[in-house]
Image (cartoon, rainbow, N blue to C red; front, side, top):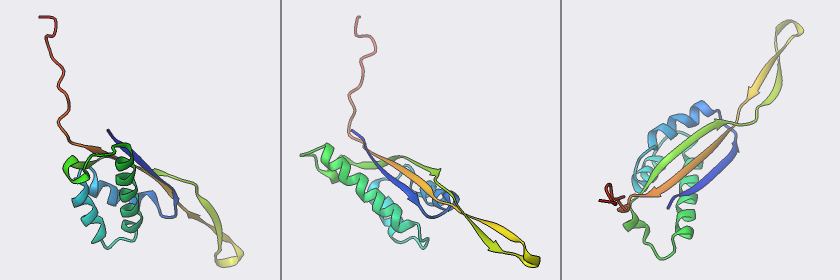
Length: 125
């Protein structure tokens, strides 16, 4: 059973966050946490907390199941653009330039790789 965690309106550009999201997509949870912990990018702190939140959500959904034995992995991770704050900055000759301060939304889905029940192909035969 999968668990979802969301981070809304994080104040960094979606492009920078997608670099880290692409790095951990499909990884096992322990390896992804270590990768984010030792990453030098400032977004890795928020993404690590989000991954820990997704693990906690999975633990609540699956009571009595060991997290280490469940073989959790990052099933999907999506980074979408959030709200954009528009500010003005002074420019030469009395003009003004627009500064767009971007934000993003991150959604992460964690699932286990336990043996899934296999559907019988020719059940009627």
